Image (cartoon, rainbow, N blue to C red):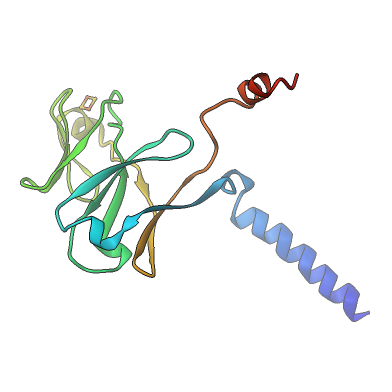
Length: 153
Ligand code: FES
């Protein structure tokens, strides 16, 4: 009888888990970005997720926790141009229409400000001196393309 009770709770937990964390998010995972000492305070680097998402990772403080870093989509929400971090002005800038975002990705000026469009933010974590970002893991290559390349119909 106790096996049935445990099994019932397990099923309930599974169903609740699917409700709280929808399956659409299950294709996300943590990817290595760099060692902490690679990115000096004020510096940034470009990162591309397996699904093709363009991300800029910036170190905004000298601390050694994830809170010292920020990962934002480098695709402008206005019309899709690439934004870059300008450490001298402490902002992300889009050269296409002079759109600007603060260090948290909130719109400061230009069309993104007028439309209240922020940069998409990605979660970060630090483990043993290594920085990781949580991103979509799906490849940009359609499954059909993989089948054609391998000769599988
Ligand atoms: Fe960035 Fe227009 S595409 S401001």
